[in-house]
Structures are given as structure tokens and as C-alpha cells.
Image 1 (cartoon, rainbow, N blue to C red):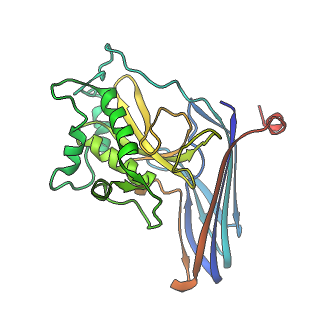
Image 2 (cartoon, one colour):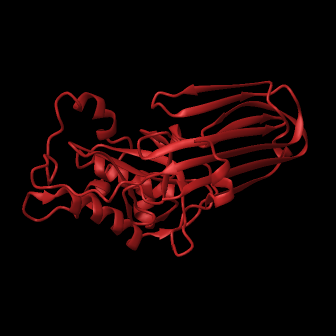
Image 3 (cartoon, helix red, strand yellow):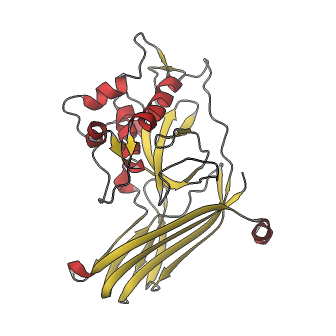
Length: 298
């Protein structure tokens, strides 16, 4: 996989100069053994009074900007070069403890995984549970990968992808009942379905690399998918929007228990409610050219 350059620009426009409250920015790729950040830069206009970086409760990199200047335009431009080395698609062997479902988590890991196993959203009539159980074989046990792959491809093939402009992520039951949603909606729905089977799952926010011969969807702004924790295999990526298993074409930025904890850019302005005009987001994920590669730091 070549070096990739990610450019993410978000511009807010207002009818007249307004003041700005604190903004939290979560756009920097998450460094790991399969995703190395070679170079990154964040530019904000107007320039903030202060900009500090923290690691949140999940270890995600978050920039916090405070402003003392009014303006009718506020822009954030994040640029990052990453060395993306996706692992081969994982495969469990019969000797792995999670090869068949149901399986048990290690007693030492279970307390740390509990927040990702416990369902977070109501399912009063058991609709989510019923949907999840359809991927189990009639007679136990069921190969675990069959369940995970079945859900991933089942959502992609049976649901209708649509971009939503409403703020936030819809309830998993809405996604199930309408059989439609955005990538964030799909991810949350699959997470809640897995949790009802006692499988640890968490939310991932990031970017989607779309090669010229790809038919991927959901990467027009940021993208979202699912990580599942399996004994001996660790955290494995599943993208129900595109049917991707593993980190191929997926560039991780943040992980969280719930989508509300992994919002790429969040803040407020101080002014009349009608002052806001629009928001524009432009994102590109491209291979680094040879000339540009030569100038990259070693």
C-alpha cells in the first residue's frame, strides 16, 4: 500500500461576524502498527487564541481550540500523510478460542470489555435480538466468522444507504425498521446487534480510501465502521456499509463505545440563531506521488 495523503477541510459560513465557543477536533489518524502517521498538520482560520491537544478516555487524539476573534467564516484544514499497511484478512483456526460461537472472554479481559458488551439502546420488543439471532445456525455451535461476515454483508445487501443531514446518529431500531441509514447508523446498528449476542463491539470513525476501481460508498465526508474483539485475534474491523473485513481501505481516526464520543468536529458559535449559512466539507484520500514521496521525512 502506498503512502496516503488525507486532506480534510471544513468551512462554516455566517451572515455576519460571530463569536466562537470551544471547538473539539478529532481528525488526526490513530497511530498503530498497521497505520503509521508520517506527517500531520492542522490549520484553523481565524487563528485560535489557544490550541491544546489531549488524549481522550479511549486514547484518541483530540485538539481543543478556543477563540477570541469574531469572523463570518471559520475553517479547519487537516492534512496527514500516513503509511497504511493493512493486515491480510483475518482467519480463525479451529484451535482459536473464538472459532465457534458461543465463546468465553478471558476473565482478566472481561471487566475491560464489559462496556462494549452491554447494550446501550433499548429494544423493548426484542427486534434487534431477533435480527442478530438469524445469523446463528439452528444447532450450536456456529462459526464466529460466519456470524460476523453474515452481518457485515447482510446489512450492505439488504439495507439502503443514504446520507442523512440530521445531527447525530439514529436509533438502531430506526435503522432496522426503515432498512436504511448512513454509515454511522449502520455501524451503531451492527454494534448493538452484536452486543445482544454478548460479543464485544465498538464504534470507529475515520476515512475511506477509494481506489479508482472501487464502488465503495459512505466516504464523502468521514466514514464509520465497527471493531469486534475476539480472544487471540484482538480488535478486528468490519465495515457493513461496504462489506469490508479488515483494515483494507479503512483509515482509523477514533474509537469509542458510542458514536456520540467520536464526533470529528464539534463546537458552537455565539450569535443569532439565523446567522449560520452553511457548512462545506471537502475530503480527499490520495496516494502520495513520487515527487512528493521524496520530500517526505524518513
